[in-house]
Length: 344
Figure 1 (spheres, helix red, strand yellow):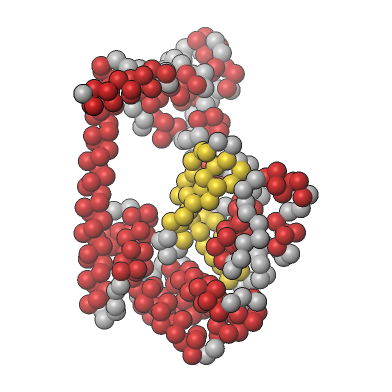
Figure 2 (cartoon, rainbow, N blue to C red):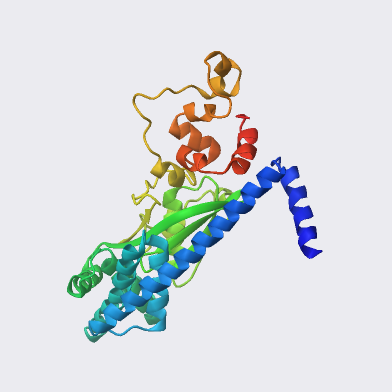
């Protein structure tokens, strides 16, 4: 009875959204969800197996592994691992990085480096120690090596460099009213989200990350664009610096495709357009007005596939996904989007 009630509610929601509720369409949806669930279960099994192998190899090299480093290794392997072998590599790198960070931070404390940082930044000792750990971790992971000596050297250099980088990878975004939620991950594998107004620049997001994650106290929050406008001030006014609070640390945002995002670009376009594939030089493309109107019929284009004749950048701007991603969607997901954007 409860199952039947759930089905009835789903059918009502699907009909309201303009989805095809025929038996064939529902069967296709069920098959898609079942296949997705199986794939997820298989990925988790592979992930656990890869994580176990990475832990054993790191222990065999004489390094300690704790619960915190294991959780970080699992997170990074799941976020960045392309296959089992890559998951092992990603997890092993994190485990070695954590061992290197612990050793480097202890050396820095022995040299009183944390006291120097506290004086320079005007922060508490606990805040500075956390900051140093994150900088060392970023430097270690940016070495892109699974050799401990190289990792440790990069971690040490990150603490010594006058100009420091705090690298954040953006995995995606979701809509939440007039705002967007940006999904991100640190180099150490820690995931976090940040809600910003749609249209926020990459630069302002970077400064917001710095202020929320690296400062001891938050004096402002990146919640509303109108809040800044009402004060007629910018983040640089609030922060009193060019790009960072101490003038030495630079926040770099890396998009899903692995490139550093331009600070002047607006979100979410900066994320979506970062990974757009170039159009084929020998391809046939038509303007949006042609494909939405009636002229496409005179050109002999197929009604169901005429979206393929949009340029990639135009398609992404309209559908918020690539043509390749759209083409892989089942028909019951494509139809509502086509109706919404005038391609049905």
